[in-house]
Image (tube, rainbow, N blue to C red; front, side, top):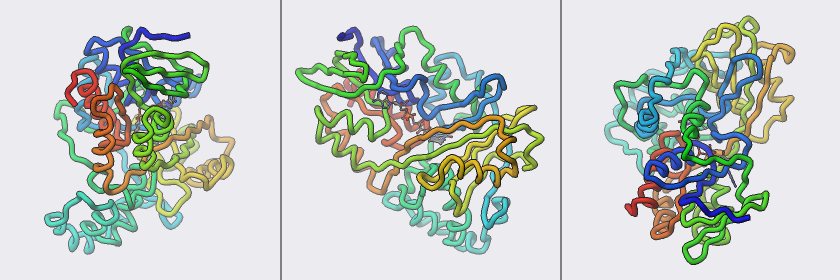
Amino acid sequence: MIANSYDLIIVGAGISGLSMAHYGVQRGWRVVVLEQADRIGGSLDSHRPHGTGFWLELGAHSGFNSYGHLLGILEERGCLDRLCDRARAPFQVLADGRLQSVFSRLHWLALLLSLPRLLTTRKPGKSVAEYYRNVLGSSNYADLFGPAFNAVICQQADDFPADILFSPKPRRKDVRRSFTFPGGLQTLADILAKRDDIGIQTGQSVQALQYADGIFILTTATGVMYRTRAVCLATPVAAAADLLGEAFPALSRLLQRIATVTVESLGVVVRREAVSLPPLAGIIARDDSFFSVVSRDTVPDPTYRGFTFHFKPGLLDETGKLQRIGEVLGVGREQLEDVAGKTNRLPALRVGHQELVREIDSHLIGIPLALTGNYFTGVSLEDCVMRSLMECRRLLDGAG
Ligand SMILES: Cc1cc2nc3c(=O)[nH]c(=O)nc-3n(C[C@H](O)[C@H](O)[C@H](O)COP(=O)(O)OP(=O)(O)OC[C@H]3O[C@@H](n4cnc5c(N)ncnc54)[C@H](O)[C@@H]3O)c2cc1C
C-alpha cells in the first residue's frame, strides 16, 4: 500500500518531531508523524503507575523560562496557564558513602583564586573540563562541578564542548524560572500532538528511505510505504544515520561521526513514610554506578515519593541497580511500590561539533529533507525546538 497524501512526513514523535509538526501545520502543510513506539514523547516520558495517580519522569524533568520557542508554542496553543511550579528543594551530593550539601563540597579559596579567570577565558574551542577546571579550580571541578555536569547530561561531561553545555538564552520574566505540568512533562508531548490537523501514527517503525526525482519513499517495518515530496527525520542521530545510508551516504557518514551514549534509567515509587531522606530535587553522584537521581519532591505528593536513577551503561543488571537504589534510599525491595525502566540515547558532543553541523547543513541545501533533534545546537528541549523551527523555515519557506 502506498500512502501519499502528505506534504511532510516526520519520522519520530519526540519533542523534535512534534515541534516540527506544529510549525509545519502552522504553514498549512498536511503533516503526518510516524513513531515506532506505541506512545509519543520519546525522552519525554512521565511514567504513571496504574491506580496511583502518581507520576515520575523517566527522561526530561524540567523546562525553564529560557525556553522561549517552546513557550511560544504553548502560548499559541493557549496552554501557558497549565505550567506548574517546581517546588524549591536542594540537590545533594553523594560522595564518600554519604549525602552532603553542595556548599560543603566547595573549596572556597580555590574558587576565589580561579573565578577572575572568567574575565579572560573563552568557552569556544574548549571542553567542559578544560574551561571549568580553569575558572572554578581543579579541586572544585573534581569534587563538585564535574559530577554536577555529568548529572546534567547523564554522561561523562569532561569532553563535551563548554559552549554547548550551557548556551545562554534570554529568559521570559512572565514565566516561572523552572516548570513542569501537573501530570509531568509528558503533558507537553500530549499538548503538541493534540491537533486534528497533525496525523500521528504510532507503532510505525520506518526502516528504509529512498529518494529519486524529487520524491521520497519511506517504508515501515509493517510494509506500509509512504510517498512524499518532503521528509523530516526527528530520530536520535544513529537512527537518522541508518535511514540515510542508502539515499544520502555522505550525509549518513557525517552523522555517524556524532557519538552517542546510553542512559539506563530506573525509576522507583515508594510511600512517603518509607524514606527518611529530607525533600530533595535530586542527587549528584561522585564515583558511583549512576550519574544522578531526579526526585519527584519538586512536585510534592501526599502519598508517594518517586526517584529516577540515571545509571552508567553496562555496569549493573536490574537486580544490581535495585540493590544500589535500596542502599541509597534506605528501603527494601518490598517497599518499592512500582519500578519502571527506560533506556535513552543521548549524543556525546565533542569540541568542533559546530563545524560538523555546518558541514551537515551544507549537504542539506536544496534537498527537501529536514534533520532535527538534540544533536545540533544542544541537547535541551529548547535546542530541539529551535532546530525544528530552523529546519521548517528552510524546508517550507525556502529560507535556508
Ligand atoms: C534522562 C534524561 C533527562 C533529561 N532531562 C532534560 C531536562 O530536564 N530538560 C531538558 O530540556 N532536556 C532534558 N533532556 C534532554 C531532552 O529530553 C532530549 O534531548 C529531547 O527530549 C530529545 O528529543 P528528540 O525528539 O530529539 O528525540 P527523542 O525524544 O529520542 O525522540 C525520537 C523519537 O524517534 C522515534 N524513532 C526512532 N527511530 C525511529 C524510526 N526508525 N521510525 C519511527 N520512529 C523512530 C523514537 O521512538 C522516539 O520517540 C534529558 C534527556 C534524558 C535522556
